[in-house]
Image (cartoon, rainbow, N blue to C red; front, side, top):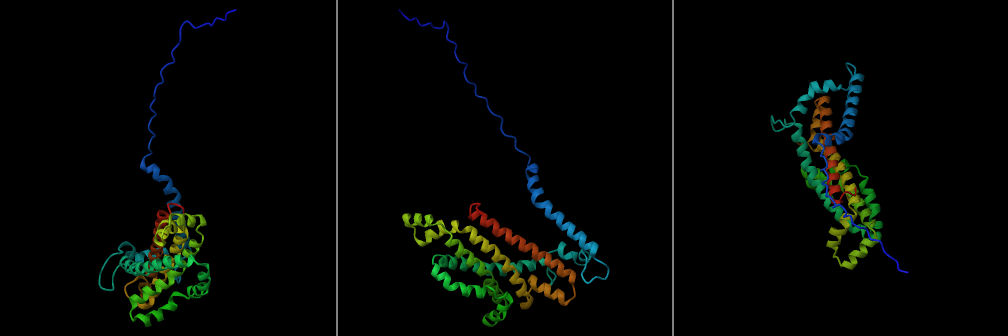
Length: 290
């Protein structure tokens, strides 16, 4: 018995696939893209500052020992509006004074960062050596910045290197200790890879250690730059010159409290900018891990 196979009389062809171009994603206007970061990061602190100024103004009474925000603006507003005026060797704007202080901070903090990272990296390789020097570091780091000033003046016989030394000795400890802690926290697998690749100490430092310990290192650098800025303001009150610290001391001797409040605003804004700058560099070096 034969089996017959029925074949269709006609074979229908499948329709050819059509390529449909997807519309390009619509790009939001730049103002809308900036709207969310603006709302999240700028507006909240502005509202808080305005609220604090409003409460301060409301609580200020005539004849109070401290000036109100309106008194500060009316008396010392020119220091805010014109930060870079020059009317003499000692009569200059607060912008120039901040730059003078920043120059000293840059030298002192740069030296402390260089020495602190290198020495911390060396100490982090040896637990025995770190245990040996840790008591000395803990004693020295608790010495207040101004306590170093007489020693530095006696050693250098000049106010500029003395101020730089005070910055250096104040800022180095958090950098050194955090770097050593970061090096000790590097996983053993990374060290094994370096041994397999036969990396020399310099290559291990630049290719593995810096990136692996970057969150620790830059945490120490952020603390260090804040301490450096504090130290220079305190040191300039005693060493003189045209820095922002001496301006505060001179304003106090002249009973210009409104000028002191404006100088404090400059100091706080500069310290905030320094912290954000170091944090930004840390994010770049650590590739966004901090």
